[in-house]
Amino acid sequence: MIVCSCNIVTSKEIEAVILEFLMADEWQLITPGRVFQAMSARGKCCGCFPGVINIIVETTRRYHELMDSPAPKVVDLLNRIAAQRTRIERAKKNAVAKRSSSPVTGYSRV
Ligand code: FES
Image 1 (cartoon, protein in one colour):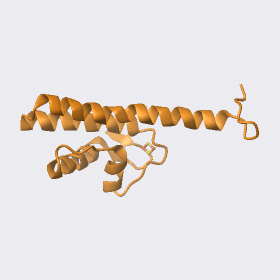
Image 2 (cartoon, protein in one colour):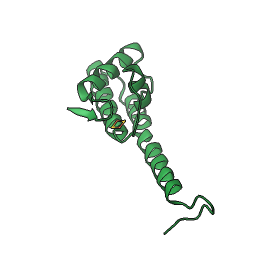
Image 3 (cartoon, protein in one colour):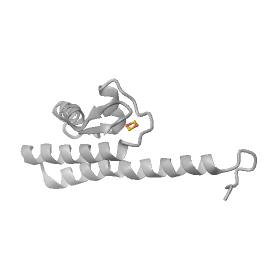
């Protein structure tokens, strides 16, 4: 299934990159930016990033389940990965607010 229409990237390709990262260091924080960089792609509209984060969380969860990793450490890692959604949503809201504000006064045009 295509996850990123800007770069035509599938969920399987993303999962493969994530697994490579996990095999190199299973406790590292994997971000959409790092995944895209590894695929020689880049976030253009970044609209797929929340979906990419979901794939990172799910792939990481399955990996650690197979490895029988200690649950508290896995939960902490998954929470840190999922927290990226909040940062992305905040950045999106700031970008929208910036675009809709007047270039002269900085006040909203509403
Ligand atoms: S849909 Fe992935 S960068 Fe635009």
